[in-house]
Amino acid sequence: MKTGIRMAVAMVAAVSSGAMAAPFSVSSNDMRDGQPLAQQHWFAGFGCTGGNVSPQLTWKNAPAGTRSLAVTVRDPDAPTGSGWWHWTVVNIASSVFSLPAGAGDKNSATLPGGAVQGRNDFGLCRLRRRLSAGGR
Image (cartoon, rainbow, N blue to C red; front, side):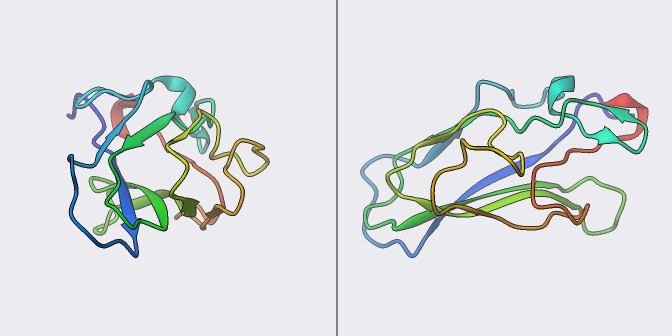
């Protein structure tokens, strides 16, 4: 049985060019490598009792020339054979350096202007993170 959830959080620098002065990095006040997400970030539905709150994310050192960014959250260990897409956000302006907790709600006023959420594997345009087997 797994002791934690491995959720891939990827940031993509779209249409970028040029050399990087420092490595691109992503961090979160709400997630720790190798640790389960707090219950507030779990899905509320299908028997799960989470809070449906997307985690806070911060990034720095996007490559020079980056015009926009995207966030993708995918669980590669979901029992589907191909993983599970929990959240996608595209067209985040390069002048934006973070998303607050809760930005993934469909009614969030904190998603940056111009950013667009895609449909996840639940068929929803917002973050939804289902509780895995065994409550982890």
